[in-house]
Length: 174
Length: 307
Image (tube, rainbow over all chains, first blue to last red; front, side):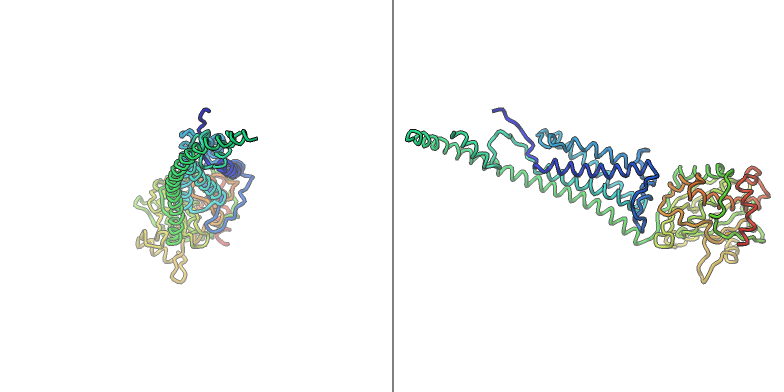
């Protein structure tokens, strides 16, 4: 029987990550629309340190002239292929490393944006924080799912699933 | 049936050894996988912990900075801010000001004009970087003065985050230079955002500030502006709350738009300040002092002063 290598990633990895990606897309889409259409206000209290408008209209709301909200949307859309079940099943180490590096780039950007909110703008945008938390949780899930993924030959007898072994023997018995 | 049982027995014996071997191999593989997973999880946990510590550290440091000081950094004004001041100074001259946005009141003075080293009559500004009313007023004053000359070295900052109208985005005159053929300008930020002494007044400036600064019960009257001994401004030029939640750059983006609440307030009070400076310069330059907005402000100045 030809060998068939799989990533050994947990079965929950793809659906959980895709759900988080969709949440990220939703939040980033809302922020992007609000950025371009000023008739759509951000539902956000402006009290104390919390002020979405101050953050989304700040100089830091654009990077190289590109709205950060649009970059966030592009990031989450670009995340989809990495989290498809097919990608999670693949034993290709380039996919695993690429997925982790992609997530890490998002975390790096989140660190910059949190720094900008805390030290430059001195205001916090709740919707942006939602995106940051989604990015962080997605990264954490990706990291742990990747850690649990030990590539193995799916056609080989795997002690992880003793029932399969028994089935093999029983099949042989037959 | 018996043959079937014998076959079954032989098969069982044959596969018993195979099963034992595969179980040994499987157990070894499982142990190896468990070890790999354990190692990977330790690395993953460490990496995630590091990321959370970095982000948490940034947030906590930001919160601590705000709580401990209430003051903001004073940074060189961005190109966008400097350009917006200069651009608004000229582009808004033909706009009819909405004088209902102007606070004050400006008052007439009859004292000798302070003069700069160039002998020109001086506009003296005295303020504090923590002061929210100064925060609003600086925008209008900078726009008005930019109609008579050019600024360099403007800074941007925010008023105190623990005062009324907290964290009002503003300019600072602490490092600013001003060149004009018509007036001299001396912008003094007496104290910084932490209420620490920053710039001293000359004896003549201090005497004027003491007399007309509007200090009450030992509290300096910020902001105070003397327009060549002809007019004075005590207090804010407009309501600082219109700048709430904005950054200096976003104020700059709005100030040229007279249909925005920020642009309307800044431009209208800049027109009033311009009218007062025109009174100092004898109506020079004409293109500024006869501009639509300035003429309207000049006409209204008397009634504004008497409010």
